[in-house]
Length: 329
Ligand SMILES: [Zn+2]
Image 1 (cartoon, rainbow, N blue to C red):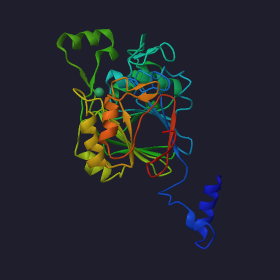
Image 2 (cartoon, protein in one colour):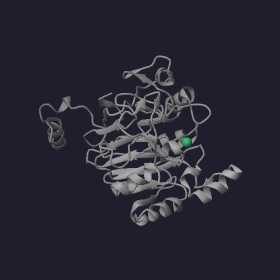
Image 3 (cartoon, protein in one colour):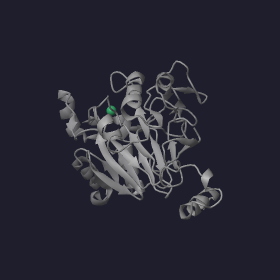
Image 4 (cartoon, rainbow, N blue to C red):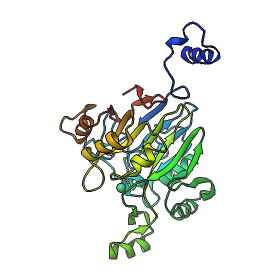
């Protein structure tokens, strides 16, 4: 127990104890949540970077959207993983390709020459770590894939649609809406099925895309947007019901999702958190670990009214229960 934790515990017992008046008000539980980006290039924020690992003060570790930049289940950066979240099945989130080695290629154009389809990087990690995939939509696609690769779908695929919640250790995970699309790219299908879809340009239906709200044991309540546009739920549900105090926000822009201007509206006027982590910039946002001045990440940082933190790959940021970064940002 740290000195501040000990003091907090003592102060709960008496208001008269000397020193208690100086205690900062703790919004909820104690400790910090560690958030580490697993991008393509150490110390940078590169175009395909999406993956984040969240670690609760209780030690629970949750991977969000492995994408292409986690180098499979053996990536040493993963460590223990208790659950794998997937917002939607597009290739840059489910993961069709990965790097052959750490930092392969350059940040503006990473080397993703290792093909991990049709299994997908996400499912390979779920199987390798024996950690449940938490996903919305139609779970039968993942249940069949996990089963075909020798895994137990009952244990490894956990359905979580909008409005529902589940627990991973002491972390509450809720499914929230995203307005996007969720067609399954044909690379994840067996060749004979893929050919049928490719002939017509159709994609397979696997349900709706989603985002997540994570409430950690210290009170940090993080909204992970997934890929989305502006939605009324960001006001009514994410702020109104869950009271998110931190946001991981997609800023990649046209034609896929909110860009810096729209994302700034989401955080300034709808969710109104205490801090934000930029996500999915679809650009080499940093050079030598410094934000490129003309980047869309810099534009978003300027437009947002609260601190916007850049997820430099490999650097661990720590957040308190109020959603403020206290270390590593
Ligand atoms: Zn997408």
